[in-house]
Image (cartoon, rainbow, N blue to C red; front, side, top):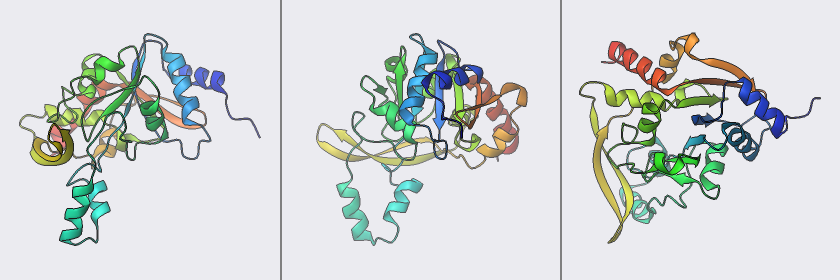
Length: 258
């Protein structure tokens, strides 16, 4: 059996996959079945991106919600009083301490690395390491999960890239930005627990109704010429431009969503 790639050979494979110094790179990764340690992948990515680059990961906390699938799964089977007590005990989002939920080991390692920045949205925060980490994560408004005033929006305007590592387009967060660019996008109410001067409180707010149910189809029709595919550490990868992904998703949604 061949040995698992060390940090140097992993970095070489990332370069061959299209990762370049100075990129602002949003990574979605699942390390299950790869044998890779999240710390090794983080270090290899940072090594290739170099001092001018920035590594960004989703650090979402969908359980901090009254309506998300993650929250509804937690309260399944509870009666009304049990739900009330459960929600009363829910801690407010803390950018410095609250773990991400369902984002994978790499996201958690990046989030918890000393010096990492994290945006302040209580449901759809991002974490980042590198030159532009703090600027990209700053000023993430409550009423803009994944729109122009989120780290994702900044990455798009600045020509960022996405690396899908052992995952498919169903988790491609970049497609959500297209939902904000649809004329008169559908809106919905959200609720989460935030820390306010008077203590932890539930806050209701309105934002775009996010729907990832067709993302796999959108990705399947993304032009092959716009996606650089490779294998890194035995895992399939896809690298592409965030602006290209958003433009494609917007055209697809405009044509196919009703």
